[in-house]
Length: 199
Image 1 (cartoon, rainbow, N blue to C red):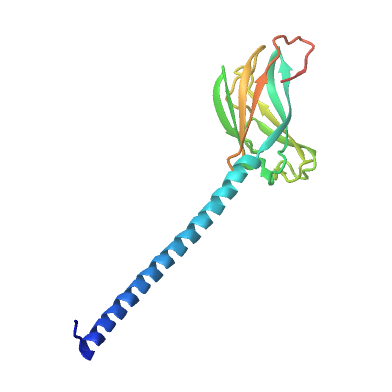
Image 2 (image 1 turned 180 degrees about the vertical axis):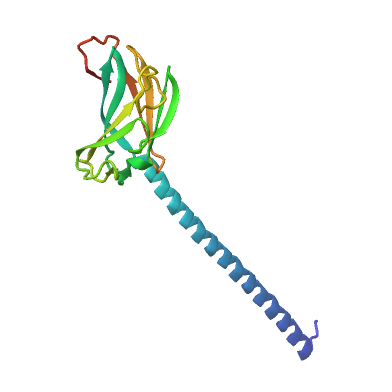
């Protein structure tokens, strides 16, 4: 029914071979692109996972909060800080704290040379002034923040002294972005005998 010469069959075979080779090349290029993209996505997913884990776990834990009382006002706030369980080492020099309340908003670094901020060791940290790093779950540092009194000339942050019944929301943010929030409540009654109060 159909007549083909040997030359015609050869031409058809070469054309099919060229198309087949082209398809294999396209498939190989597509596979290479997919493998490369999958590798980049895997790397990005790993980095995102590590950052997300750090933002959740690398946070501070506030063990206790107290205030120094002068003339029935809280003039200094002392935070005893520790690492949260499962956290990597936390450097207080790379941590910020934010105060929000009736006295406004104030953000500052918790560095030892920040005006109105002092860091001292309670347990486990050998050099808290120049290297305040919590490396173990048993480590404890005391962070003292001096509040603003317009009548006294001293190192202090811009947030005003706390009066009876005041509430302040305090947020600590580590360098990895993990946050710890605490609400400070001043007792509704402070007597002249009180030199310090638990907040």
